[in-house]
Length: 493
Image 1 (cartoon, rainbow, N blue to C red):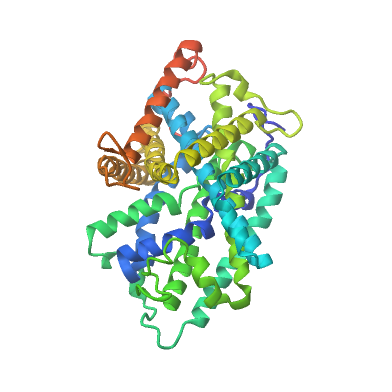
Image 2 (image 1 turned 90 degrees about the vertical axis):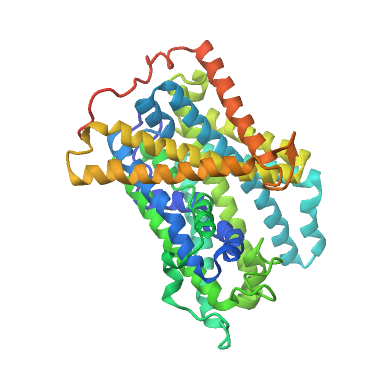
């Protein structure tokens, strides 16, 4: 069977949805860069701040689940925002998702290059191989090769995609859990940090700046669960399974983060010397420094796990922009060509290849200009994610406004929960926007006295507006509400 857009139906079950969500979040890759900076902010309350960061993601995920149950659609944020607020807001919501995922994909590809050559160096004992990533030409060619491979796998069909994902996700989870168990076992008896349940109590975080850091962190360490909803039209039980998978994914990731955080704290402590998580020299890549002392001769497995994590996420993350562009093409918000689906693989090959080309061009451009520009672009990513998550959560409240008081469940799941999540993310968005105007924000690069992160975000937004008006001029049907009508009748289901 095929969906109205031509996608294969019934190909993705609950387990596959959860695997896709975990893959896109990329827990091993995320944690190796997030553990150190978070300890710098909150010390031993690392697990607590993970809990704080988890809350807005869970609240927004509940709103996504309600929207998907009422209207399963691969366009997710684009489709639901257009239904609730009209075509122009929906188009910008889709633009936010596509640009955010493009930025993430370019970053993932770049990280995959770094760990690929690091793994080769560890495997062969030739240190010069690790330095190849600093060669601009080698870096770009390898990165584009990885992007092309990920696009090829996605174009082969959702079945092949899942075959690769099961292997890569299982590998990284086994290694990460093994690392955590080994860290608990290897923790020295004289460790200055002793495990305590108070580590998990968010109310022990008495600094507002640390609280804000936890919320900001959630954008990066939990982002990606919404891919579960993107494959709703290809799932078994489109109305229930994707939303359930998104919720399960967020909860599983939280449990994994808490377990790993506690184990790492117990082993390394929070000191700023030696293996302490407060040591600035190890904060950028915690696992690279702790894998040897914790895992001994098996430390190379951690490099493999990080590489697998980035590779899996690179491939699974392509699903979101491709399906969003497919939906936008289907409803004529972008050229009709994006709505084409290959008859054999039943995948949006044109949209997937377009997303791959955009990712490669973006990475090559940013990498050629400056590594600082690329880093600041990643920082701007957080603003993009906050924007489209919050917009979709607000859309949930407005979409179901007529049924909010039909039952206690509707009030909480369709109203209060997504509203609180949207407000929290909106606060982060506006605070980051304000802070990013400073020339000292991010890498410290600036243009005309304005921080480069702010400039990048504004340029992306303005480019989206320009493209939207071009699309409206060339194909007005969508913007007139002829192809995707705004929801005006009460939704009681």
